[in-house]
Length: 66
Image 1 (tube, helix red, strand yellow):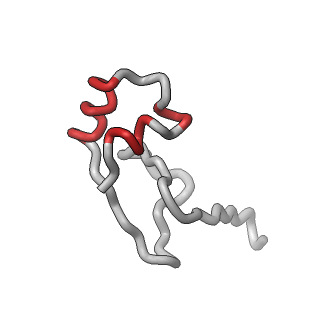
Image 2: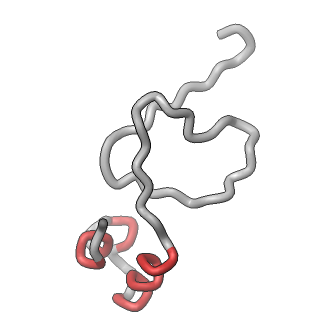
């Protein structure tokens, strides 16, 4: 589980106040995914806002038959 100190140390969140960091931690959740899982597909609605804390995501876009 990520701590307030770890989250505030990320460039994306460095300008947030401690209260804002605490609020993010209170409403957010850490999710672990297995390799090879499709996280989303083009054209689908974005229901969540994600921050990648560790690992990588490969983005692949198919155009026609390519």
